[in-house]
Length: 333
Image: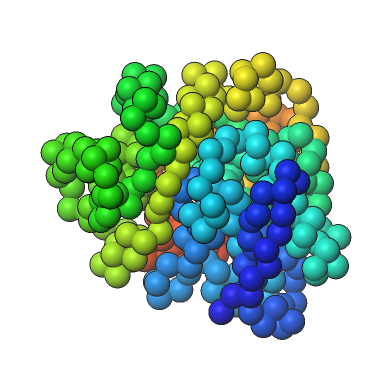
């Protein structure tokens, strides 16, 4: 179904692009899907009746999945948002344009793929991207109080024990540290989710579960998720903690506020959020939409979905009815 295109980020790190096969039949230009932290491009390809990859292809798009260095298919590495924004996304966009001959492309970006891509965009590093659909969080991260507590008080306790967290420890805990965290999760998470799903909630949010509403997932997708999460470095959490504390994306050293100066992009933004999101509050996307709307009124768009959370925006069994048509309409616009 996919053709593989390895590419080197600007600093030489080896990443990978996946292109939906039969792209010659596409009647529209390229669209790049950008995954979040500690997953992979395949997160947009769940075993549902119809997923976003399929709907975009049916709509005539040349669909590409980016596996940036936060992907579980890449070598284990300690990354932060600045490194990804500077090196991975700009190189991926240029590679797609080189291969396809396109002068411009569109992007659908999620979670930490969204925050890092947003840094690329406002710094003017991806001028080829003219439409950006962002889910969950972008320029102004707002998290639940319990997540703030974990970032500020629990993270310093974890750092001496491990350089990574890995939700897959729910199924495969190879050493004492991973077994310890799995035991903590088993004692504190009683929701009707898989062991990996519970570890996901422990790692990324404040809910039970944190990244989806269980009634939005099919039983098949719920099990499929078990193989879609892997290592995420503490170095990332340290960076996002500074951003959360500031209420806006800042550089890892805290010296640069990425919303302090006018964004160096002419892209049109479409912001999506789930009201029930327990990883990043819906206020995250509301704040960023208001920021861009003030700069160029009535140009950008904002959509909030009252029965959705974080990742079920893409994994939900009814997302092909509730959400994907809006994404496609906005890309077409």
